[in-house]
Length: 355
Image (cartoon, rainbow, N blue to C red; front, side):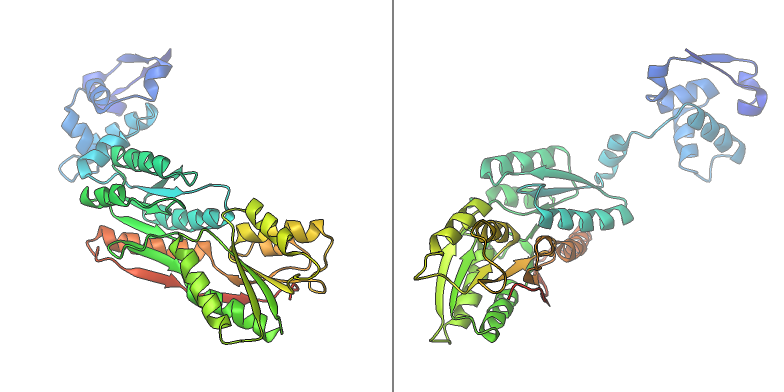
C-alpha cells in the first residue's frame, strides 16, 4: 500500500490533514470519479479541469492536475475515441511482415501517422482471403479510422472491402490492388518500370531473355507483363521466354529449368524482390558469374540488389514512397474527398554490376 497525505496547499481546507491509501493495482486505473472523491468536487469539474476549460479556476486546475499526476491517471483513450467517433488508429493489412517492401511501406505510413496523432494496427493475411475477411472484421470491431490494404494473391471477392466503405471506413489499396475502379488505389508506375527494364536489356544487346513474373491473376503482374512484352515485340531477333512464379522457390525452380546448354538465357528479368532471391539462388548454386555468364535486372525496393556482389541493376519500386502517397490519400478521404483515385509512384533506374 502507498500512503498519500494531502495538505491544505494540495486541495484546500476541505481535505486538510486527510491521509489516503492507494493499492498499487488501483494506481494505474484511477478514474475521474476517484479524483473527484478525493478533492470533494464533481466529476464534471475534474474532467473540465483536465481539459484546461476556461470556466475552471486556475487553483482548481492545479489541484486536479497535481493529484492526477500523483495517481498516474491516464484518460481512457477508448472512451474518448468512441465519443469522438475517431479511434485515431489505422489498419494496415499486408500478406507478410517479413517482406522488406511492406516494411518500407509501414515505416512511411507510421512516420506520417505519428505526426497526425494516429497509430497503426498491423495484421497479416498470409495471402489467405479467409484470413483477410477476418482481419477486416477485427478492424470494424475496433472502429479503425481507415484501412490500408494489399490484397492477397487469391482475392476475388471484394464485398468485405465494400462493407468497410459502407461503414464509413475508407479503404486505400496499395501495391497489389483490385481492378475495380470504385476503390482508391496507390500503385507503382508498373508499366513505366517494366518498359525501362526492357529498354535496358535491349541497350545491353541481350537476345535470349528469360522474364519471370508473379501471379498471373494479379493486376500488378498484368500491367508489368503487358508493358514488358509489348515493348519487346518490336525486336524480332529477341527471343523472349515468359514464366510465372508466386514465390522465391518457384522462381528458383523456373530458373534452373532454363539453364540447359541449348537454351541458356543471356539475361533474366525479375518482376520482384521475391523472384530475384529465387533467381540468384540458382545462379549461385550453378556458380555462374555476373555479368559474364548471365545478366540480371529486377524491379526492386532497393535492399535485396545490394546484398549481392556485384550489386544487381534494378528499377526502383519504392515501398517507402508508396506509403507516403497512400497516407496522403487516406487523409484526403477522412476530410470527405472520397472520390476514387488511382495514383502512381514514379520509377528510378539504379545502375549495378549485373548487366
